[in-house]
Every structure is written in structure tokens, then in C-alpha cells.
Length: 377
Image (cartoon, rainbow, N blue to C red; front, side, top):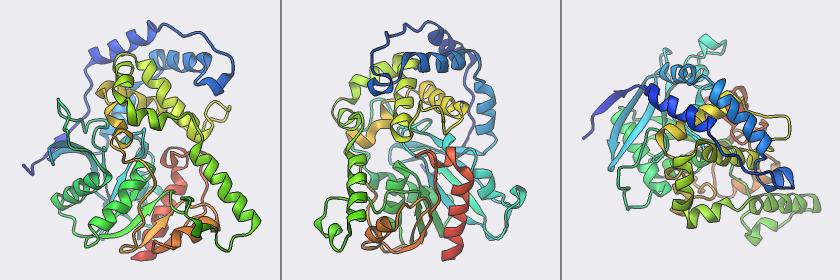
């Protein structure tokens, strides 16, 4: 039951031919007034779809992913897929990195190399990592069984799976990093497996106002205004969260039958997070389409939304048993809020043009990861 099997992505050509045929047969909606305020515009999506059908090279992206050793293993009734890239540097620290939603391990294509082989990327080899990058349950090649397991996939259940994965790999001391959904899993893993986790590093999510009156004590007008802005950002948007929590199966039919429906949904999430469509796209479209193609080929558009329908979405837990760091932490006010319930030893002030930091600002993320684990070693 603890067998770890080599894995390699090898998409049948007929599946790629079917994808292109579906893209070319798309029946396009009529454009409503209001532009992006009504959702993803027809012209924007149509241009991206045409490139997906006739310009995007999946085989090149498949080769990029396959350049990293990949494996699967069964844990708690779930087949877990993961990349496992060992560093050539002696004394490298094992590091499990958890991707975001709605994303995939493709999120880390540009950071694994510098983390595992800093010498080969012009960085100080004194800080290096053996990287383990799992696909979250229900995402990509970590597919749910058919029929799906009725037990909820809570963040804690994922953390227990990650702890078991690192045990199977023989790592008794390791670090953890995550973004978005990964930022929920990472501190939970630290709290659950504090005997082995040496540090918990996330991109953001700590110091977000929760509505606790204690957060307002001693604040001036500028800080109160900042809290109000953050609260407005947290409650704004299209309302996708409540819908996913209530009716994910309804959306699943569109995701499974239409690659354009899947693409539109993913693009809207990125737009909602980052200002997509503004003319300054923060992530290369080949990377966006690599992610969309993975979702389509594995038919995981619906199952990857489990954080909402299982009620697991939210903010990272507070924990003080393991040192905590934040790479793109935000203001001093956010740090003060975070320090109330976490052992903050690193608070990076890096900025990213996208919520998907590893995709849009890989150099700043690598720098933050290296700085945090250098600080706690």
C-alpha cells in the first residue's frame, strides 16, 4: 500500500485532436453590455481560444513537466501525484510546496530549478532544497476515484496526506510552502506535524482582518481605512464561492463537455484576483493554457473546487508551534495582526502583479523562500 510508482505524462494524440476539434466548433455567446463587469468578454476569450486551438503547443509543455521526475502513491484512498526533484547540493533541505486553486503543479515550473539547483541558476548553493510538489486531491493527476469518496476533503485531511507522503519519502525534517489553497494547507501541516516541519512559509493570507473588534484597538485613521479596503476586497467579486459551495455539480457538466467553458471559468478567476483583461497580463498565456489543458484533459474542473463545497476555503489557520514566514506579506498593520497568533520570523515586502506569485514573479518567490529558510536554519 506504500508503493511509490514512477509517473510520466503521456496524453494520447486522439485526446489532443478532440480538444482542438471542440475548440474549433465552439458556439459563441453574444456579447452583453458592460465588458469585464459582466464576465469574460467574447472577443478576449475568442482570441485566446483560437490560439489554444492553433498556436499552443501542448507537447512542449508536456515535455517541460516531464523534465521533472514524477510519481504516484495511494494514501487514504486517494491516488496522489507529485513531482519529486532532488537537489545535487549536499545538505539540501526537503521542501514540500503546495499549489493554489484553481491551479496545478504547472504553477511551479519556473521555481523548481532555482530551488533545487541554485548553483546552476547563479545563486548561492548554500541554500538548496529537495522539492516535493504534490497535486492537491481532485486536481490534475491526483484524481478522485469513481464514485468519489464521500468523506470530506478538509484542509486537515490534505495536511495528513502530505505528512504521510513526506514520511514515505524518508524525510524526517522538512519545510513547507504554499500559495492560496496551498497557504491553507501549509500552516495546517506545520501544526499537525510540528515534530518534523521546521518552518511554514506562505505567500500571503495572514494579517487579513477577520472582524474581531480587538483588531481595531489602537489604530489610527489611515490604518482603519486600510482595514476597510481589505474587508471590501475580501467580500467583493463575482460570488463564485457561495455557488461552488452549493451547486458544484451543475457547473461540472459545462466543465466536462466544453473546454471553452472551462477556460472562461479559469480566466475569470485569474481576472478576479489580478485584473485580467487590463492590457497588462501578468502571466504568459502559454502558462495559462498549460493549466487549462491539464484541467480539461484530466476532467478535474469540478473536483478541484472541493475547498468550497467541502467548506474548507477561508484563511490560513494561526499556529505558533513552528516558525512562520510570509513572502509577499503586505503592510506593517497586517504583520502586527499576524503576530498576535503566529511566530512570525520573516515578513517579506515583495510585490507580485498576480495572486499566482510563482507564475508571475518567480524570482521574488525564490528569493523569499531562500531568505526564510536561511533565517531559521
